[in-house]
Image (cartoon, rainbow, N blue to C red; front, side, top):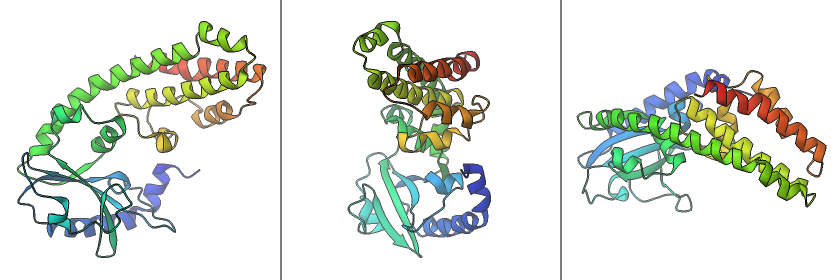
Length: 260
C-alpha cells in the first residue's frame, strides 16, 4: 500500500503547481460578499492524485453572515448537477465548492463529524481581515473537548457490543455471524478513537482506515494488527475468540493506556 506520506512525496511537484493555479483562480473571484475561502480535501493535504476518472479541487467558501449572494452569482452555473456540491471547471481544473454562511464556533458544533474533520484539515487561502483565523482558535478549543467526549462515547459503545450480556445473547443462538459483525463495528469505533487521541475528528468510513495509518499515535505493528483483525471465518466461534482477544490485547489496551 502506498501511504499518504508516499503519495504526498510523489505528487509534491504536481500539487505545488496546482496550488499556484488555485491561487490564481481565487484571486479572480469577486470577494465583496465573502468572509473566507479555504482549500480543503486532498489538495490541502498534498495527496491529490487524480486517476482515470479525474479529480476535483475542494474549496470551502464562506459568505458574510446575512449575505443573500448565491453560489452561481460568484462561480456561474453548476456544471455537474448530479454531484452534491457546486462544480465548475476553470483553467483545466475542476473545482468542487462547499458554500456556507460564515461558520463560527457555534455553527461548527452543529456539523456532522466528517464535515468537522474536513473543515479542520482545511487551509485558509483568503479571508477578510483574519476573521476565520480568529474563529478557528475558538473552534479548536471546542474540538479538543468534543473529541475527548466522543472517545468516551466510542469506548462505551465498544464495551456494550463486547459485553458478556450481549455475547451471551448470540452464543445461545450460535449466531457467530452476528458476533463477528459486532466485533467489526467495535473495530471501526476503535479506529475513530485513534483519531480522537491524535486530536482529530474521525473522517468518513470510506477513508478512515487509510488515513489511520498516517496518524502519529497508533499501536505498534498496526498494519499487521489490522490484517489479522480483518481476517475472519464468519461462522466460527474459535475465530471470533481469536479476533476478540487480539482486539482487546493489542488495540483496545493501547487506546486505554495511551489515550488517557
